[in-house]
Image (cartoon, rainbow, N blue to C red):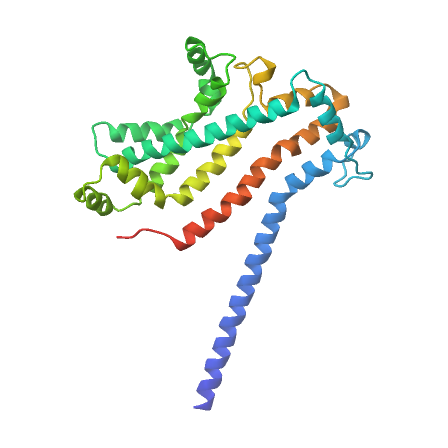
Length: 292
C-alpha cells in the first residue's frame, strides 16, 4: 500500500514538474515576443531624442549618447511658425478622428445587423462582396474616390476626409462575424414581444457586442488619426495635425530629428486609446457571452 502511494506521489511530482517547465517556457516565449514587439517603439523614442549628428552614425547605436529634447522643441517651433495656429491642427485631427470613429461604429453596426440577422434576396452575394473587398487597399479606389468627391463638390472640404472613411469593409466584416454568434432564438423572442428591428438592434444585439465594438474603435481611431489631407484638402486651416507635422518633417536632412519626433508624436494617441480599450475587450470576452 505504501509502495502504491509512493508511485502515485512520484507520478504527481513528474506531472507538476512538466507543468512548471511548460509554464516557464510559455512565459519566456511571451517575454521574447513582447520585447520583439516593443523594440520598434523603443527605437522610435531613441531616434527622437538623439541629436541630429547621432542620427547618421554608422553602425547605428540603439541608444542616445547625448539625449536631448531639441527635436521636439524644433517641431513645436516649426508648427507655431505656420500661419495657422497649432491648436487648429489639433482641433482638425480630433474632429476627423472622433467623427470617423463614431460614424464607422454606428453604420457598421446597423449594416452588420441586417446582413447577419435578416434574410433578403442577395444577402449572400453582398456578404461575398464584403469579403472580397478586404483584399483591396484604399489606394486601389483612390482615383474613384477623388472623382466622386469632386462631383459632390467636397474637394478642399473637411468632409472629404471623413466620408470616405465611414464605410469600412473591415469594420462591417468584423461586426457581422460577431453578430452572427447571437442566437436567432433571442431575436425571435424579441419579435414575439413586439420589438421592431431597430429596437432589437440597439437594445438587444449591440449591448452584447462590446468586444467587437472596442476592437473596432481601436482600428478606426488608428486609421482616422493617421489620415492625411493628400490631394483632397489644400487649405491650411483644414489640414490635420499629422499632415502639418509631416510637412515639417519633410523639409530636408536638417529636419531628420524633427521627423523622428513627429513619428513619436503621432504614435502616442493610438497607443493610449489601445491601452484604454484593450482592457475592456479582454474583460468582456472573459466574463460575458450568449449561449443557446
